Image (cartoon, rainbow, N blue to C red; front, top):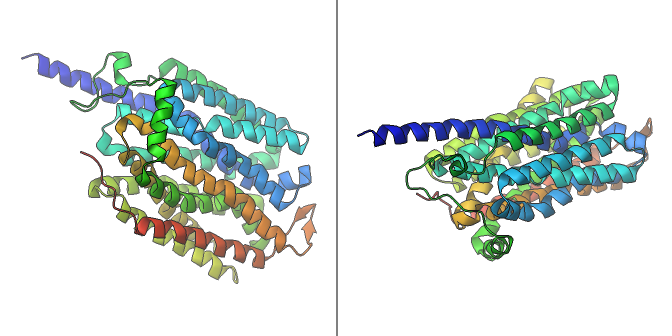
Length: 435
């Protein structure tokens, strides 16, 4: 008679501990997004101080995405073999070192090294967090937890907007990156003390009765599992759909959005950062909402397509309004909608996980995540190159001033990539949740 109440009590402890662990691993994930979009806020400072062109700045920003892309599959393998806790700790320490190196750089080469280390470190954080969610939370809530994770991450993007702009204005851009580096080391310590890979590590039951926990795999087993993910044809549509949506978003939010508003709307850096900030707010709101809707509908494809069409429309509006100057309130609404609708990409991770064996969750999500960051790695320097090709020789304070014609070409290319993602998803078999 007493067994059932005791079991319920233990499950309650599992749920409580799950949220504690999620809160702790959220700290390093804040830094992931800070580093992802911070270069856009100080883009003009970096161009002037290191005397670099738009294409070089795009490459400096995008090196984060190059290494992040390459490390998504290893991140999944490390999560499946060495465990998500160890992987997050290592990533937090390396990103902290990278942030300090970047903040201390006196030459472009050292700045590249710092961004490389930052990208290497933060690339080992997100997939382990999703792996922890698969162990500590009901799998039927995975899309919603993915959305909540992205909500947390975009809080870091908020820190890299107006607060970083204010900090850069008063103390210089280097101070912010030194501070974030120190927070990375603190985050690693918190994860080491509190986080556990799975409930059984604390002698707690699984969150779902009868659910089997994954066991840590040997490195060779994890590599073999990766082969199964890559050769599964159903793994590729989520990869490609994520490519176009996230790549275009990061090219604007993470590299060129602030510069676009400063140069074509006459805004100060703080004003431009404030106007781009609603993208992050839209992501914060949209991610859990779209994840929840997808879980309720038990469908990934329809919410993805609906959100993607709205996202495409926001880029069309940018292209149309580039000839005029909409009011600040219109821009705020546009950028909030852009972030909200773009957050449909969170469903890519659920798709990638659900079409592969549960034991390969880390590798499957790592492979899917690779698509979005490959898109960002390609599009940030590509957009910079397009702007350079249309540059008419104007500069101000050592900073290149790009024409509206250049930005219009960028917007059209972005829309082509988004259409590619939607077409891929349109002809993809709808992926439904297991169970």
